[in-house]
Image (cartoon, rainbow over the protein chains, first blue to last red):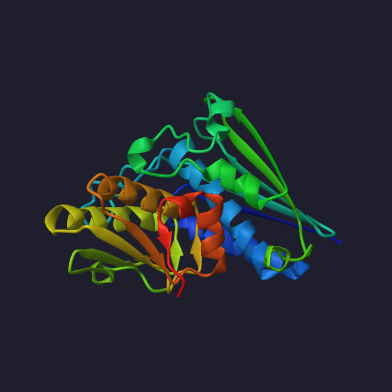
Length: 164
Length: 107
């Protein structure tokens, strides 16, 4: 069976939750384990967050707001596209942005490396995507944008049983 | 969904208790960091406790929050504790290596 869906939304952090919940609702048809769903949500969250804060540099929410509602007059316009394809028990996810792109992909993939240390993020985004999905591919052109492709087999069983 | 408010930050003795929201992601990270740091400067805080009781989702932004706070208090001998972490949260803490620098307490 083949099933496909596509989301297009503004690159603002409000949509991070929406993206991962929408993807997990889409995947729910394929009968994944709870752990697989949690993994997919985390990976989608990482990819979408990267597009928003690195691709389009929409950083509001971090610092300087002093508890006030975030100033939304300086949002960089841009969209994030999330495409999902279920082919049998294989899930393909593609997250695309037309943002600034990644200059040094090799460096960016290193755990703990970050170009925005002031945001106090962990630099583990790509490491998490790799850990939680079966396959990760990143394509990026500086000035043009970035595409992240991830694959995961659904219904394989859960890591909890394997670990215990 | 319950939003995190300033009520979720409490200083008890020399301990800052932070009750984390249901979902800890980049969208909510700014608020958590700002409030935690405000109390770290103002009050006499030595240790920080992150309470995951209501938390069902966390991504690497959450790791960033904990790493950043740990960096701020560890130079004065402070420690970071995580309580009520469910299996998924525990898994994130393990994969990120954070388990080695914070104390995950069995509940």
